[in-house]
Length: 90
Image (cartoon, rainbow, N blue to C red; front, top):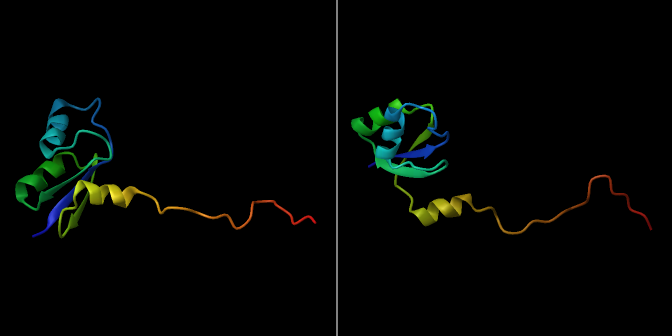
């Protein structure tokens, strides 16, 4: 079974109540929040109502909140090879 991965990209501030109510029905309350819904015609219709505000992709299985959080965490550590404009003075 496949799922819609829906992420709220833009805020619904200033839009008609109908748009914000559709977002609430989908479970999207904050920007950059991600929810998963099974692929059905009713969910697809809701997505079409707010298509300018959300990013949608189709995935095979929904991720847990911890898995979504781990996707957003950058890799630990970094290193600097050299600074910009640095010369080797001895």
